[in-house]
Image 1 (cartoon, one colour):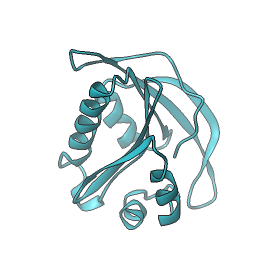
Image 2 (tube, helix red, strand yellow):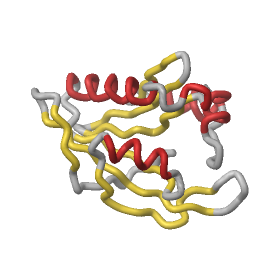
Image 3 (cartoon, helix red, strand yellow):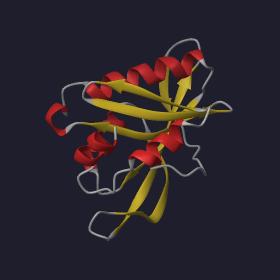
Length: 150
């Protein structure tokens, strides 16, 4: 996972194998895996938070991330999760477009949150998606998160 994240996160500092292992050790976290990508999320008290989503560069725009997202939403619905949260680097327009196209709405901004590989800073855009229980429907929500991810 760490090697895939290193390839996928072109500008961002990727997590180390130790970071990933420590995150997955939490009883609230889980990983959804695909041969060319993965998604790490945590689910606590009605909220789900996407901590990492990575697709190998050779497999991007081939439905890997969409498949992982659909799987997460299905799991979230089964576990009575009402909202998915995440943060994405403001300069990562492809990722922002991906989430927006799936109904996520911006609910906040954390200035200078990310340190990029070159040492510069980037803002984190906070996004949220409401999950309508029992229907599998999705709708943007305007409630943010105070939790750290990324």
